[in-house]
Length: 491
Image 1 (cartoon, one colour):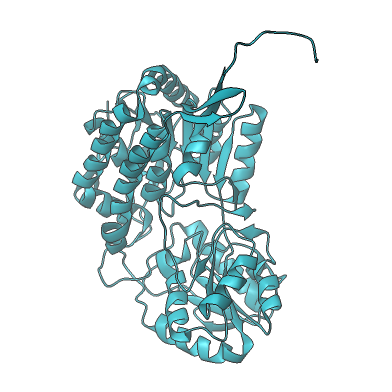
Image 2 (cartoon, rainbow, N blue to C red):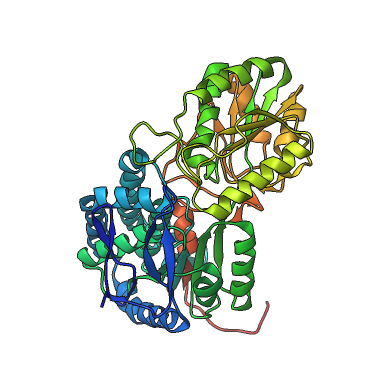
């Protein structure tokens, strides 16, 4: 039973795990503070070895019955799940804004509708995963997508609701049972997801939540050999530890990791449109893995582009994410603020020039000014490493080949942006080594399209059929067309 409920701006949220259809409290707890004003929001149950064990046993027990259902039989459960999220839309908005510092307006108009879609769309898409026949001269191959088993879903703090549902939707639609380990710094909307799942009538054990730190709870979860899949979004160092633990048990992993994406501006681009889009890279206080944080601008238009960008950035309002006019909210945690400050200070000490920003914002201790650094070198720390804050760098180039070389010159390869005359921009985009790249646009997504990175930006793809290829065991049932007679003869 839940020992108590947190009151988050009038929304009651359980601080406890959700295992086997009920709330489970732990003896050990951790303190949760809001990034908005550092106030203590409450104390959250820290998952122990016993809690992880209970969640795995529960998910294992629920798996056979859930897996036996057809996609059509699972769909009503998932449709109700999406509807229950919709019924609690304002609660999700208020809680995630307070918990993770996400703009309340973005939650209302983007995140919560997308979370609902993540559940309902994959439930619908699963209907197409019927037996697929491959007809050959010798045999009929009946290709099946069978549920894999117990899935661990580990989500990051920058988009906890959206990314939880992005993984949970296809995992459940495929017939798996799920254990979510939410981010320690922003766990509360995952707790609300458990309420929605229960109200939707998901059988006990099909959907579970175990809270806690990655070093403690997460490590216990990903090292368990009973898992069938691990889906993780987060940092490269954490991914390495997960992959090492999973590798010992040969558990397949999907890893969506960091980015250091190029934002290329060609001389033939619509410069004001490009600059307006570049200003969007500061949204969510720059805590977006797919943001184009490396501005690569053709030298002949660089000065004009910077001035146009300055004008757009100067209009950005930094402050309380719960206010409608705010466009840049807080940094998630004091440790992240110190990380951002360290990167900027070291870059300036190494010779980078501050065009604007470069210091904490008067709005509060966890707010940082949108920042642009120029005169940075390709091999510098600020260019090569993901800062994950409202910090952009700008480099210039003279030729297409130089732009492509700069864009490809990091160990990351998640996203990208290229602005220019359409055919020209497409040619550049096709040469950039990355998981996806937007031409004269940014942020256009569709659930049917693949999402993921290359190099240090990840392993695997999510979205559409790619999600089901990961969350399913693909099996070929082979039926011969002629009577088969076993023989050792090779004649």
